[in-house]
Structures are given as structure tokens and as C-alpha cells.
Amino acid sequence: MKKRNFMSLLALGLISGVTLAACGSDDSDTSTDSAESSTSKDDFSVVMVTDIGGVDDKSFNQSAWEGMKEWGEENGKEEGTEGFKYLQSNEDSEFVTNLNSAVQAKFDLVFGIGYKLKEAMTDVSGQNEDQQFVIIDDVIEAPNVASVLFKDHEAAFLAGVAAAETTETDKLGFIGGQESDVISRFEAGFVAGAKAVNPEIDINVEYVGSFGDAARGKQLAAAMYSSGIDVIYQAAGDSGNGVFSEAKDLMNADESKKLWVIGVDRDQEAEGKFDTGNLTLASTLKGVGTAVKDISNEAMAGEFAGGEVVNYGLAEGGVDLTDGNLTDEVKEKVAEYKEKIVNGEIEVPQKP
Image (cartoon, rainbow, N blue to C red):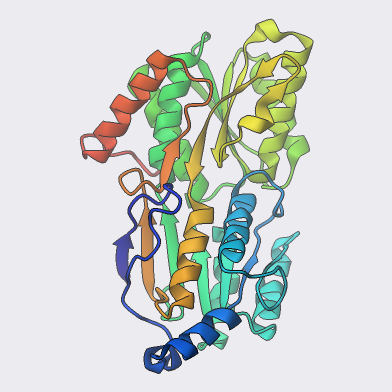
């Protein structure tokens, strides 16, 4: 499959108009006059099928949905079958049903948000070769599917640096959602970043087993904080809300504990607000929403990246770390490591 990179993905509004090799239908290739192009734009519709957790998970799905809504607003679209819409998956068994519903509703572009949809989308895209699909966080080798990957491990490395520079106990925690190659990248990067600062630092790694179990996330966080861990990085979707909930409960009871959570996929500073402060140390960013906007615009213009793999990393501005509540000294250290990764001096591991 073809591979390409986007520049400055997280710099909203700076990346529109990127020209790609046209891989759309024959109609788009022959439609050259402005009237036909205008009609195509007016009629173009997109839909996303969510992973587990819903569009209010304050993380991965929500980032994608926010990007789709922005695309709709910028193009005068309304939420619905003639503009943009999401189909929520509450369990894995709903993926195929939702994807087929999207095809039957005649949406022009169908997004699968998350690697867990790969098997279902592979089947449905193979049965609907004229339909355009996009898989986020995995690769499907098919001419009617565009694949989007993020170098999550690079942003996670910076989170590890920030955590190791901030901890007062030299004990860190990582809570993942469901074990997979994607979440393993978060784990590997975080551990590598922390160890780069302090090779002797103690890091406890746990997995919830689900992206939709906040209660279990809260339980794991409680055990970690009680063991002396003072910074937890969560890459767990809706389950990660349980980590924030436990940290806030503990800080509201005794703010002298100085506990921190590192958010994921979008700026989760709002999730860290407690009675007298904010415990979100920083958040790793993943430009899912902007990728949704850009690919939707390209497909609408007849430039769908079918059969291609799009890679987004620190160098492309596709992932990053917010400043959050980092001290100036920690921000400087993070910037130093970021430059080394972008320059190729550090190759961040993708597997634990």
C-alpha cells in the first residue's frame, strides 16, 4: 500500500487543500465543470461508526465526532443522513450491523473509529467495493479503504518524560483500556520516556480489559495511588474517566496528596478539575478529529486516499503533549526530548 505523511495535523486550518493522488470513482475523475463539482459537494455525506465508549467518552470517539461536526459546520452540513452522523457501537457485535447500516443509508464516506472495527470493516468493505471507507488506528489493504495510523508511542514518550520529571515518589502508573498493538504503543512509549529520565523508576502497568468500564478504571487507579504512585497515564477511553474520578475523590479528601493524571487523545484538562485545583498534569494529543476533517474534504473533492496508509507523528504535528500543569523546567525537558525524536536521535519503541 502507498504510505504518506501529513504536515502540521494539529495546526487546525493550516493543512486544508493538500493535494493527493485521486483514487476515487470514475464519476469524480470525469466531473470537471464547476456546477457538477458544486452539486457533488452539496450532496456529499459522511458517517462514523464508533468504537466502544460513545461520542461523549471525552477521548478517542469524542475527538473524531468533534472533527466531523466541525467539518459539517464548515461545509454547511446538518446532522443527519444527508450531512454527517454517527452510529454508536455499544459492543463489538454491533460493528458489522452499524457499518452495513451506513452503507444502506448511502453515506458517501464511512469512518470506522478504532482498530477494533478492522475485522468488521474488512468484511463490509469487501462486499461493497464502490463504497469509500476509512479505518482509524489500523490498516486494511483494499483500494476502497484509506488507513490512518498515529505514532502514539512518540507522544507517550513525552508523557513518560513529564511524569518522571514530576513524580515525588519515583512511582508511576499506566492504565490501558484493552490490550492491543495500539495501546501497547502507548505503554511502550510511556515506559521508555520515563526510563530515559530515570532508569530506576518504578512503573506499574495494568489493563482494564475494556474501553467502556469506568468503574474498573477507578478501581485500578485506587490500588495504584494507595501503593504510593502519584502520576498515572491512562490510555483507556471511557474507562479512563474512572482514573480521573478516583484521583479527584482522593484530592478532594486530602489535596496535600499531590496526585496527577495524564490524559489521552485530546486535551483532558477539564476532566482534572477538583474542588481547589486541577490534577491533569498534561495530555497526549492525537489529531483524530482533524484527520476526519481532512480526509472528508479530500474525498468530497474527488481525492479520496483509497489504498493508502496515512501516518501521523511528532514530526508531522499529528501527535503531541499539552503543557497542562507542567512546570517551566519540565516543559523545557519535554521540548528537548521532542526535538531529539523529531531529529531521529531517539527512536521510540512501539512494543513494551
